[in-house]
Image 1 (cartoon, rainbow, N blue to C red):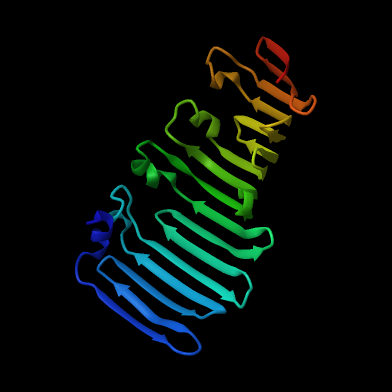
Image 2 (tube, rainbow, N blue to C red):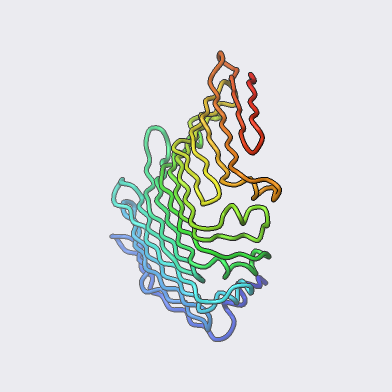
Length: 277
């Protein structure tokens, strides 16, 4: 009754597996599920102290699930845990013009569960996803993120980076800003229920630059040093020419207030404002 699953399971299929349970533990051996469109294989061993599992899945044509895409897709993964040590995961996959890899560990401690992660993605042709997104897209990008997520308090610390090449997303306002070679980098953290920060922020393309740091406390005062440059105002209004620069400097003014200074300069413009919020 699920259209996507029915399409994968259509035709002649086979199922094979070995399952045993004895004193050492429970074993799943050589599981294989095969249909005309897909194949899944797996092995696993579990007992009170150890977990070892591996999975491999291949879809011959992703279009049977997502008609707006075409090409094969694959997924491989392993999970291991020895005694009371961390649960270690390693997953990778491919799809139409895309590949990804992710690995990390889940550990238990006095502060609760801690998940570390390291993820990378390489998308070589955005145009392959234009029909799925319902808009004209093109270009390529690579992205990576790593960090730690703490279940207790839902805190996290992550580093993000990306490189873009002639990315276009079908938006006449944004596409000129994204053209050419671009780079993004930032460190993000949620340090408390209402507190967070972004550091080492860098966003650059031939058309723009954004750099800075900010510490945000929704229940108190804030810090920020953000600087933005648009190489040519003509990208916003063809009647203008020349760069636009904007800076925002914020600092604490007592326990729950923030002094902020905003300055914008551009063709025939030099505006500044000092406010306390």
